[in-house]
Amino acid sequence: MTPKEQEIFDILKQVKLFSKTKKETLDYAVKSLGCHECKKGDCIFDSTITPPSLFVVLSGSVSVYGTAKSKPVILNTLKKGQVFGMASLFGDTCSDTNVIAKENCVYAVIRQEHVEKMLSQDITFTKNYICFLSDKIRFLNKKISFFTSGSAEKTVANYILSLPFDKENNTITLDKNLSKLAQNLDIGRASLYRAFDNLEESGFIKRNNNIIKITSYDEFKKIYGEKL
Image (cartoon, rainbow, N blue to C red; front, side):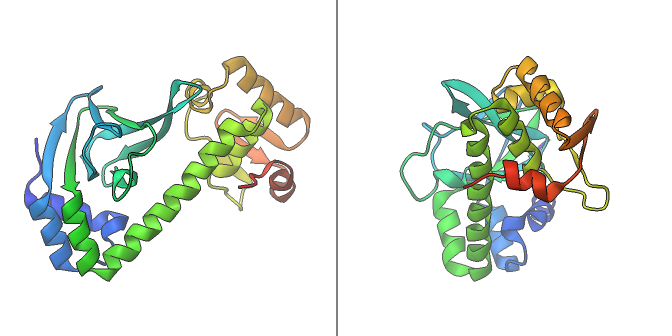
């Protein structure tokens, strides 16, 4: 069921892109956007053909896919209140990216001309927009390091380092099971298990299911950290 305007307004208020923006900006976004429902498996966004627009997930979740070695690789999973499509705005066609509905969902579309107006009229929205793109660049740089690291062991180490670190317990929690992780990192499951075994044998980590305990985070980062 498509959300009502007040529901959409409340969702947008929680989106980082609209954080602390003018009420007029939120009102304008709600009035100008279009809502769409889709079923699991539907293609919502194709960077090669979809008109430049800003998309906001209003319910459900979607998966963002790129390509590596001519194969589709999942880059991210977005849920309610998260946005995509910004890389397609204000420039030439970006690299192949597809967004597929991970489950039945509802999303909003804000066309480029409406984004331009909000950028010109609300400096806070503009700053949020720049910060969002900066965060996206850092995120994608980490993904690039996964695919160019040169070995399964380094790829796994870089992935571990990209996740939030619990300083109190010296642990990191994997955000997906090993099957999905192997697919995400574009390496075989056997290579993935060997990589974890090698890191454990080296004394850097101890793995208990999806909990990774790092014996010396600084040393681990010094050896395996990304050089971007």
